[in-house]
Amino acid sequence: AQTVTQSQPEMSVQEAETVTLSCTYDTSESDYYLFWYKQPPSRQMILVIRQEAYKQQNATENRFSVNFQKAAKSFSLKISDSQLGDAAMYFCAYRSAFPLGGRRALTFGSGTRLQVQP
Amino acid sequence: NAGVTQTPKFQVLKTGQSMTLQCAQDMNHEYMSWYRQDPGMGLRLIHYSVGAGITDQGEVPNGYNVSRSTTEDFPLRLLSAAPSQTSVYFCASSPGTPQTSGYEQYFGPGTRLTVT
Image 1 (cartoon, rainbow over the protein chains, first blue to last red):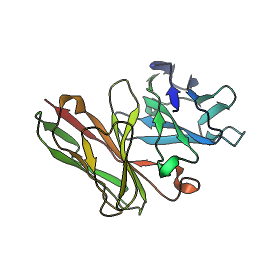
Image 2: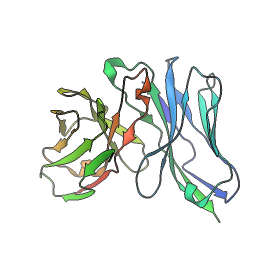
Image 3: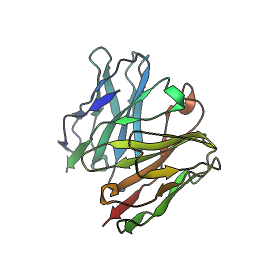
Image 4: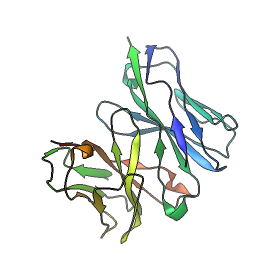
């Protein structure tokens, strides 16, 4: 079974600064997807960025980028130019590329609460 | 499109009561699933469905039933609520096949359930 670990329960960053959230995972599979989800106080789960394991190039979405290290099974999220609206819980998640029985289950980490200081 | 909708947003139950959490999507997605979120933990899969008439268990299925009579709806039933089922429940849907466009999951707004 796959596991996802987020070792930073809370992080804080100054507005306009850069912050990196850590995520490690354990799997024996070679093909999979990795995701970062944002959960603001509204509870809505919002997809921030995704990475296909077969792609060596790190994914980027505007101010959000990842550092994907497949051999090290590491998938960190970098938020540049942090804004007050970035304050939220951030979850790292894993999904098999070829799930058995069509089960597209996401395996989540325990989350990192990000505070943005003005 | 309304996306994935869930009702109710909040619910308080007494131990032993039953209820159904509703989930609907208007995107014609084949795949739907239910997760629960507990403090200090990520979301965990309860049940899922790969299409109408087909359901299967996830990681934490005990105490919950599901059915999928239509593509649009995927209700979650608690037959006899227990305090351990106090949680936030999310419904999600996903299009296509897992190997193509189906890797993105769209989440509903969640239902906060308290069992006393």
